[in-house]
Image (tube, protein in one colour):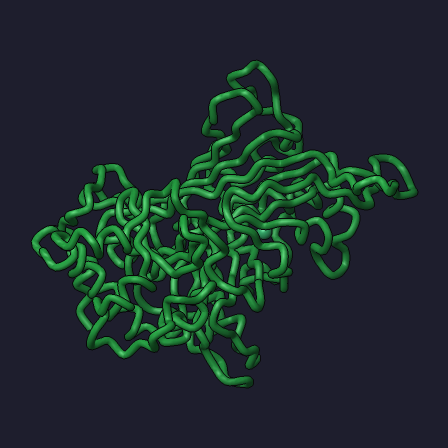
Length: 430
Ligand code: CA
């Protein structure tokens, strides 16, 4: 099906600044609470949020096979279950409705007042009910950096790493949308040089710059997804900050991998940018040597050129960019991750979320975590307010942004912004 929605020459009657992440070619999907306290599925053009539930009720999706309540839900799971053909029909129709030359809604003041919201009138929610969350570890640079620090610089990558998209099953209950503050976690750590663990607040709270993709119902139990079909089951992507407590992680992660160091919070950007919208930004993945096993060999370009930035905002200060990376650095691409995830017959459902793993680039200013940027605290980052950071302090805000720009067209993800608060203090009993 042609993707009219991606037509780069299309302009919208909604005013959209040139540097907007959300031109009419983006058409992401999200869930928001409106000024009337109604939860609806929506999209965004420029700085306007669009109530798709209301648009559907007003008949603007006539001719597309959609159930009456498909957008009047508090998650996108059912819409995602409808599959790629329906996503494309809906994106194409939205592009038509908001095309500068289409007067139908543009000149209908009453309908416009029902459908359009300013961003300060809405509150973005988690866009999907995430049944299962898997986090990969697919950046060679990140795995090499962490292996060098935690183990041995001469054998930084474990023997399996170049053969398997390594991952672990995470916890979906603590995935939260941008804007929700988190508490510094407490837990067990083993102080350097000691034999016995201690209990208390983590001293090494870190972010991980990641992206995550969201799947539709992909397979039957027992059925693997071939690597070259995997993209049919990927709905879209979000920015993903996989908060991590490095000291807790170091003590607990052997032999089964991360546990409480990772499951206290992971923050996502609220608008899911579809894989379809990212089509113009395909690019080659890094060369893989040794060649992977046959089920992981793919054809074509399966990576995407998505520029990524991390800002750190100290309390009372302006945000400051501390890292710039790119999604295209991932050694294992999403198709390989999904093929590997299901090769044993593991079932993948609508709304499942797969994190990429920390996306570090080749240079020290492109590392995707404080652990790497400060090299375990040995090279603190100097902030504009004169203070230094080895890891994240209470009151600091971490802001991640992502966008594609090929010189003709920009498509972005907006941001994921999270403030770290002091440890949770239980209310005293009277
Ligand atoms: Ca991670």
